[in-house]
Length: 121
Image (cartoon, rainbow, N blue to C red; front, side, top):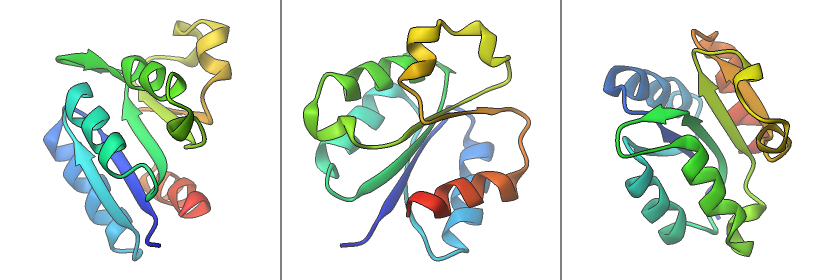
């Protein structure tokens, strides 16, 4: 089964850049610009998604909404979830941080993010 990275951000240029860099390494991606689309993709591709990278603050919901959705569905809990944000990790409660696989501070080193995805795909 092909493993897929789900990338979620409401900044199209950032999303396109990440998608290109990850796919150039031979890893399939799905992209979403908002929480609702991301949740629909998670439900549709549950067995294929190997890792999720999500922005925190987006119009129409947040990355934390997506994380909560995943935590409430047994089939999605197993998927590693990374938050990407321009703010420090200290902006989140410790309970939220404990549910994350990791935190990626923006701006980030693209190669480092690609290596994170490679680890799970």
